[in-house]
Image (cartoon, rainbow over all chains, first blue to last red; front, side, top):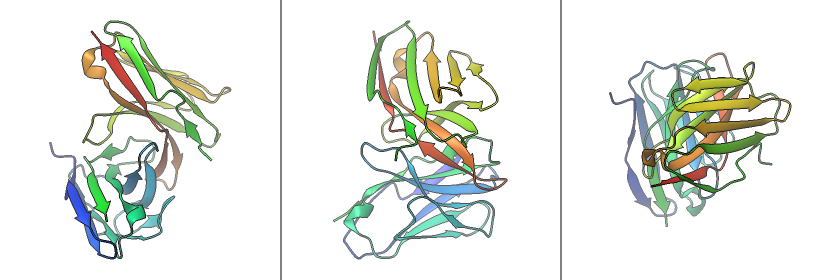
Length: 112
Length: 115
């Protein structure tokens, strides 16, 4: 009954450090997404992967890279972390465009 | 430019009464609307959705209404229960590809159901 699993749950980084956030889903969904949530704002789309082997930019992609490793896994990488990337990051997956996206519990990332 | 707005940051309702959460949107290209519920330190959980070709969808205590001409949707919870206390996000969907869609979220409404 895992659904979407994100690791780690918490992380503190120093400015300039790199970090990869991991996401895996066990629902055999085609599409996967990375969002960030900042205080007082709704979730915003960073990158998405419509299917295995494809990735595309969302609304706020600057400073991030992604990899769709296989159908289950979709990782988000910060190459050189900046304080503006302090946020809660959510991974989601869905089967088709008119199906709801299912979210993981998030990674809380602080960059000092 | 906020395309999805939830103008009430918080709402307090007595147990057993109706909770009504509102959401407005500006983009006519949205074709599917969803409500998510979020508890602290957890991810958003899907609650209910409605296609743009419908004006009402019901699931147990939860009903979503869509008024396309006013670009407005609302979530009704009847009767409200203490376990409903959470932050509720409205989201609007636009197709990216045949399998993927982009969700645009509102800023959320914190619902507190009191005894």
